[in-house]
Amino acid sequence: MSYIEFKNINKFYGENQVLKNISLNVEKGQFVTLLGPSGCGKSTLLRCLSGLEEISSGQIIMDGKDITDLEPRDRNIGMVFQHYSLFPNMTVEENIAFGLKMKKKSKQEIAKKVKEAMEMVELTGKEKEYPDNLSGGQQQRVALARSIVQEPKVLLLDEPLSAIDAKLRKSLQNSIKEVHKKLGLTSIFVTHDQDEAMVMSDTIHLFHEGKIEQSSDPITMYTSPVSKFAAAFIGNYNILTEQEFEKVTGRKIHSPEGIAIRPETLQISDGKTPEAEYVFEGVITDNTPKGNVLQYHVDVNGIPLKVDVVFRSKVLFENGNRIRISVADHNCIRL
Amino acid sequence: MHKKKKGIGNGLVLWIIGIYLLFPLLLTFLYSLFTEWITILPEGFSLNGYAELFQDSYFWQSIGRSLLISIVPIVLCTVAVLLAMYVVVVYLPGLDKIMRTICTIPYAIQGVILPISVLGLYANAPEPFSNRVFMLVCTYCIVVLPYIYQGVRNNLNAVHAPRLLEAAQMLGAGKFYAFWKIILPNITSGIMVCGKLFPDRTDVSVLSHAPVGSACQRGYCGPVRRDAADFSGSFRTAER
Ligand SMILES: Nc1ncnc2c1ncn2[C@@H]1O[C@H](COP(=O)(O)OP(=O)(O)OP(=O)(O)O)[C@@H](O)[C@H]1O
Ligand SMILES: [Mg+2]
Image (cartoon, rainbow over all chains, first blue to last red; front, side, top):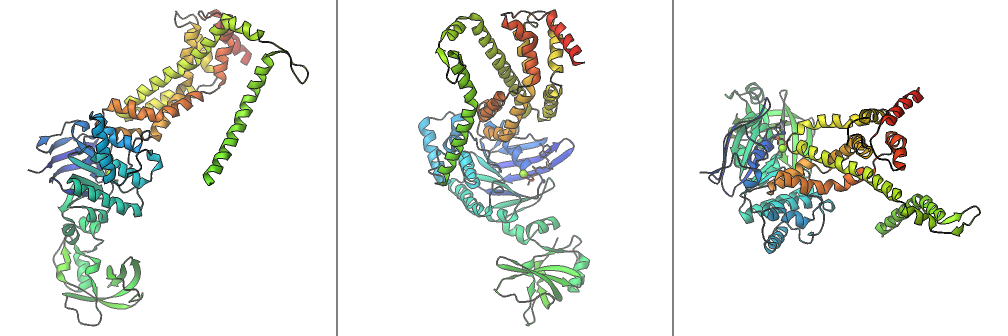
C-alpha cells in the first residue's frame, strides 16, 4: 500500500469540474512533482490533500488512515505557499515557532527545534528579523523552516519558487532538495516549469485539464512522451502529422496522433553519409542561441523544424544555407 | 551615512509640522493663564480661570460626554465590522459585495439629510432611543460605518488575510484563533489610523451642535422632544 493514495478524486467549483476522477499514489520518502499548465488543477489537488479544500467525491488515504474528512490541522501536513504567507507581526523565530506553540510543546523543545530548522535552511543570524526585511528567497526559507519544524508526514510545496528571481531560485531549489534528503520527508511539489520539475523530482505527474496525462520519472517523461500534449509541454518537441512527416522525410509511417521529434535528435550532417533511417534537406530560415545550444529554424518542403546543435563558438551555418538533416527512426516518437 | 541624512530630513519635517499644529494650542493656553493680553506681552497671571473651570461639574460632565460620544461609536462600529468581516473572510467570501454596498450607503447620503432624518426618527421615540447621548452614539455609528468598513477591508486586503488564515490553519491553528490572533494584530494599527481619521463632516457638526449640543451645554441630556423636530422643520425652511 502506498503512503498517500488519492482514490477517484472529483472536484467541482459550481458547474466547473476541476479534478476529473484522479487516482494517484505517492510512496513514502518520494519527491513527487505535479506539473502542468496554469489552471489545470494542480493547486486544487494539493489543497484537497491539505484539507483547505473539500473534495466533491473520492477518498484520500494517508499512512493507512482515511483523512478525507479531517480538518487541516488534524492532518499533520506541512505546506509552503507561493507567496510565503509569513505572519508579518512576528519575527522569523516566532514564525517558525508558531506551529510548535500551537502543539503546546515545551519552551526548551521549541527553542531547540527552531534552531535546528534555521540551520537547515541557512538562516542562522536572522532570528530577530521581521519578514518584511528579508528577501523573497529568505522569506521562502523561513516558510520552509516553519513547515519542516513541525515534522509533518508530508510536505506540500505550491509553486514555492515562482515568485523568486532566477538566481536565488537555484539555491532555494537546492535547499529544498537538501531538506528532502536529510529528513526523508515525503514531498509533493507543484510547478508549471518543466525544467524545475526535471531537476527536482523522483516522479512527475503531468496534469492536463484536471486529468493526469502521464506519470513517470523525469527521463522517461522527457524521452517518451505518451501524447501530443506531453510532447509539446515537456520537450519543446517538433510535432508533425503523418502527412507532414511524409512531406519531410518522403516516407510514410503509421501514427494517427502525430510524430514527435526532439530538436537535438535531428542531426545536421557534415558531408559524410549519415547512417540514420531518414535523411532530408532543408533551408535555414533563422537561428537562435540558447545558452550552450544553438537552435536553427529549418524549412523542409514548407514544414518548419527546430534543430538544436551544441554551440561551438562560431555559427556554423547562416540563414539561407541549404543543409542535410538526418534522424534515426527510434527518435521519431509515435504519439 | 546616507541613511542618517534621510533621518534628519524626516525629523525636521515632523518638527515643523508639529510646531505648526501645536502653536495655536500653545498660544491659547498662554492666553488662558493671563487676565489681559492687549499689548505685546500679557499681563495679570492667574490660575483662577482653571480653578473655576475644574470645580464646575458641568465641565467634567461635558468632557465625559464628549469622550463617550467620540470613542464609543468607533469602538462599537469597529467590533461589529470585524465580526462581520470574520464571517465574510472565513466562511462566505461571496457576501463581500453585499457588505460593501450596505456599508457605503451612509457615505452616499448627503451630509445634511442623514442627521435631519435621524433626528426626525428619534424625536418622541420611547426611552432610551430618544436619550440624546444614546442617539448621538447610534448616529455616529452609522456615520463612521463606511470609514471603518473601508479601513478594515483595506487592511485585510493588505495583509492578504485569506492566505495568512490558510497558513495558520496548516500550522495547527483553528480559524477563529487564527483570525483574532494573527490577522487582527496585523491590522490594528491600520484600523486605529482609520478611527482617528474619523472625518469632520458637516453632518457630524450639524448633529452635535444644533439641537443636542445646546441642550447638553445646559446639562440637559434627556429625551429629544419637539424642539428637535421643530429644528429639523425650520432647517428645511431655511434651506429653501
Ligand atoms: N475557489 C475557486 N472557485 C472557483 N474556481 C476555482 C477556485 N479555485 C480554483 N478554481 C478553478 O479551478 C481551476 C484549477 O485551478 P488551480 O488553482 O488548481 O490551477 P493550477 O493548476 O494550480 O494553476 P496555476 O499554475 O495557475 O496555479 C481553474 O480553472 C480555476 O479557475
Ligand atoms: Mg496553482
